[in-house]
Image: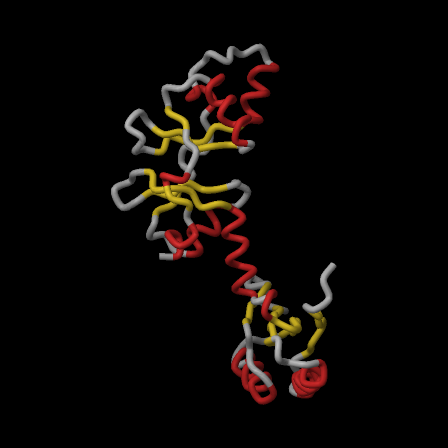
Length: 212
């Protein structure tokens, strides 16, 4: 469900056939302005990989023919997810890619999930656009800490979003708490003071109303 809500469906994607020449692929890339596009098989059903403008330019500079088949420069042949993939599968698969191909349950090309949409979802989850402050709390222990933080914040306001960092660290972890827009500075100070009193050290406060 997550993937399908973020995915650009196949009929809206620019794709290239595996039978195309490198010249035809370059023409498509230059006309659209994309750095790469998916390559599909002759039936338009199966994902074969991606063709990048950068690799075409490099091919030409090295004396390669633009009349060669596009498959000679294909990349990311195994970089894809499924419509039913979970958040972590998507997050760790997309990494440095501009997008990742999405396949349906039958293994056929369904569309693409752009990197930007994934980042947008994470930003929305952090609630930066509808929050007032982000408090960074440093924790030396985890047991019961999140519950304690939630109770303190909820005494004065509400938790708009919460995110933990440094998951691999056994010594120190950070928790980012986003406060809602109706939380003013006075309330924020009360929350920070109470957290500090309870041994939950607030190491940073970001005012989301101040944009760089």
